[in-house]
Amino acid sequence: RRPYLCDDADVALLPILLGSTEKAAEPANLLKILDFPSLPEGVTKTTGFCSNRRSAQGPDVAYRVSKEAQLSAPTKQLYPGDAFPEDFSILATVKPKKGSQSFLMSVYNEQGIQQLGLEMGRSPVFLYEDHTGKPGPEDYPLFRGINLADGKWHRVAISVHKQTITLILDCKKKTTQKLLRSAHPVIDTKGIIVFGTRILDEEVFEGDIQQLMIVADHRAAYDYCEHYSPDCEVAVPDQPQNQDPNTDDYVSCPDF
View 1: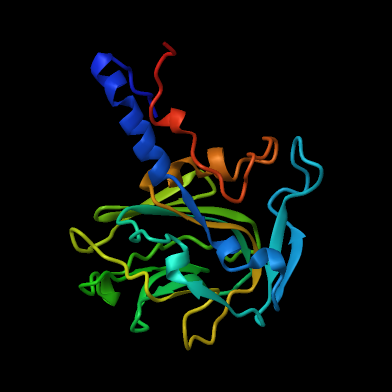
View 2: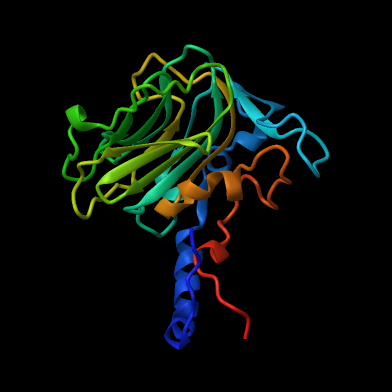
């Protein structure tokens, strides 16, 4: 992406642009919110995406999740005092059990209706239902030809922007689908977020996970492998589990 070239008018707007970018780019770290670091029942530490990372003392740290894990938290912990963003990115570094088919995360409203869900497995579905019930189940985006449960690590970046959703798999494969939601969709934050399943589902997530974040910026998905989950030969960012995008990528101007 090309940086902006600044003239006097742009310079005047620079604090506004930088401020809005930084605010929009604050990630919600779901693994922290769901208390993974304390190793609740069904969760253990394991080697992550990189067994040997440049400039690191050891391998990446991930969490191995068994079917005994039952993890949930109030949705309001994602964005305390804030509404759920209309446009956003979901970022995950994950290795589901080979051949499995389950939801990695589910967001429910106060009435217990699922509003958001990211499936792992073969031809995964992205479940999204706003306050008006759009889109209906027959219009949920389905990513055919993709298998996220092949026993390998995957960096999965989802960008939700207006009426489209783009899945970027392993920093390369991009697939865009329509997301037939309302013009100003609302996701209720008075309910709960559930990890690894849907309420009443028999299928539960089993496998390894290193990162799971929601960023209130649809552009973050396109920078996932640069700012959040880089290649193994690249030094890890200062806060790999909760790393803000570099705002220089969005606004780049000379020093004065």
